[in-house]
Amino acid sequence: MAEAAIIARVVATAMDVDATAWNTLLAAQSHPTPFMRHEYLAALEESDSATPRTGWAPRFMTLWKGEELIAACPLYLKNHSYGEYVFDWAWASAYEQHGVPYYPKAVVAVPFTPVPGTRLMARDDAARALLVQAVCQWCEDENVSSVHILFASDDDVLTSAQQDLMLRHTVQFHWKNVAPTLPAARGSLPHAGEGAPTSPARGALTALGRPGGGENVPPELPASSAALIPEESSPVGGESQPFTDFDHFLASLAQDKRKKIRQERRRVADAGVTFRWSRGADIIAADWDFFYRCYERTYLEHGNPPYLTRDFFARMAAHMPEAWLLFVAERDGQPIASSLIAISALPSSASGQKDQNFVAYGRYWGALERVDCLHFEACYYQPLQWCIDHGVQRFEGGAQGEHKMARALLPVQATSAHWLAHPAFAEAVERFLQREGSGVESYLSELQARSPFKATT
Image (tube, rainbow, N blue to C red; front, side, top):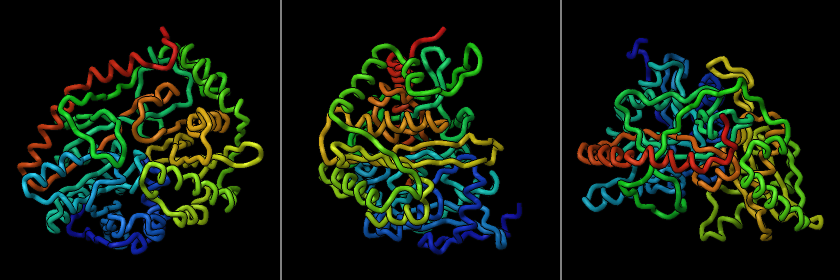
């Protein structure tokens, strides 16, 4: 690959990148998600959700060889750390205390979307390495303090480690549509598809902070934070099969977890609440309007305006309808709550897998009335039942929330990669990440002891 023939271009808006070239490159990656599609990123800008006004200044990095787009990534300059879900408030505070500017920083991420997947789109590994180099070099030239590649794919992680970026892990909770045959249900789910997660490169830091705390509350980052690197266990007793129905799923759980779920669902039903769902173009404008009322109210009840505007969802309905599934809760014929799920149903991937990426992503919810256990029903039980009925391989429950384990969402790691221009602060962060990783085994043991599944032999 002749590096001299490759040209890097940085543009200030997704609209200056050819949508077909972007989406074609995305489809060739091993872990694509709907959130990296050109339509999604463009809608964030055009709806005024992720713009300089909200602290997200787009700078899309693209590498070209002739007329071919060989690598690209979404890059945003940030003057704050909200909407990222990988907390670096303590790092920013340390910079401030020493009189060194931390902002602007650069994030390679999908705004407000903590969904693991490809961030560094590339034709091959060599192009991906050049993309990382180009991003870091551009940020150094522009006096940007740091680069943060958030919720990266395994390919991204490997390349970042090879380019000497520091790795950090967080915990998410994902459900897998398979009757477990793992001892004590210990296991790790990949970021996308069905393969086992790739281990970090030799020498890569593997620190992992315990999830928790509100998105808008700058959390502390103590050295004693517990950690987890889940390991893939080999199935015993032959191949596992998808759940046949919700009762089959419940039968795989420990008795106390099964009883609790049934009790929670019964409370919602006894309150006279029923659910209906719509997918894609069948979601009518009135349902989108009602969903946004619920979504906006939930944010405002927590003291903050919503990250996403109504216009953003209008653009999703117009340009990406197939990516959305809406549940509406009704009582006495009136809607009272809703949850919006994203769907990724890609027929193939770069690894040659077929029908392996049928994944659901828990995204947004809100309610106009309070009903006991309604949140669990709308955000977990209804989506899981739909996933079972429609052959979805995996349901990703989003960032944070160890309570999700009681609903059979198991812990998995999500990885970010970090480059800091200031040598002294880079060394300090590296030492912090090493300390943060000291709790790996204790956190893993804690989570294992709380497995929701029946133990198998």
